[in-house]
Image 1: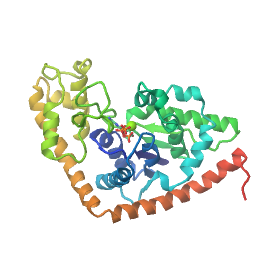
Image 2: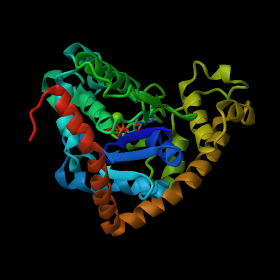
Image 3: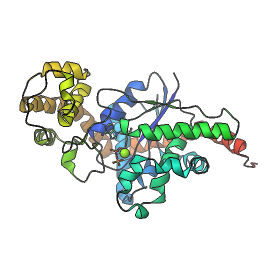
Image 4: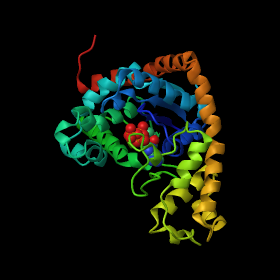
Length: 332
Ligand code: ATP
Ligand code: MG
């Protein structure tokens, strides 16, 4: 047992990677931990977001949480900007984390691209805010996709340095939970880059809300190599596209990669892709339908977010008070 915190950014285009790497695991963990699931809208604005689209995308992530099976009475679902503890603790962590630590973050380098001088300061200090998200609740475990491993490491470094500098045991050293057969789902167009909401090509990803025909078409057109599928997992080694598609199949069907490789040993990609498309539709269509139902009348979603924000704020308040006292902030 312990306390879980995790989040998804409301940046549109929720995809299969978000589902397999994050949301599905959120659902699975909710009865074994006290769970806090956030829609991290403050992270989203580290790159430009249209304000009206940000509101819709925020409701959409909450709708995806609900549609996937997160129970809002058991778990807390809320959007980050409604609980000011995140921003307050992030400032303190801006003063704990070192420039050198943040300079090593590969996600910043990727997202900032060639024009680093033009990236927002928020994009650079984003991992400090993420550490604040987690530690404002003293969360012990964080389920994430493999791409967030380095940011979780930074969160641990911040907790350790804070505890050391202030001679306290205030913060736990949080463990990542990177679970399942598809912890890093790759782009359908390029087996070496991560499937992402922010990829400009819609054909690079399967969106949770894609209809059956679109899913089948995207999988049919997904990049592959010209060889039949391997007879053993070792045969996946230099074949990133086969590795990716078979990992997706394994995760969606709750099997191991070994099981899937032996079921399709020597098969042609075309036959495998047909079955993969059917499986993806079977798993995603009910979630998409429920998301659409929730988005048609978003009052329920808004009520869930408001109730969640109250509960989250109540958990964070005493922790933030403790931190301010430790730091030496005079309070009434
Ligand atoms: P963006 O491109 O805007 O950063 P994203 O697709 O990376 O979007 P996030 O909101 O940053 O999505 O991440 C939400 C969660 O989904 C995180 O736990 C992250 O690790 C996980 N995740 C994101 N992409 C993948 C992927 N391709 N495979 C597995 N997990 C993923
Ligand atoms: Mg991301």
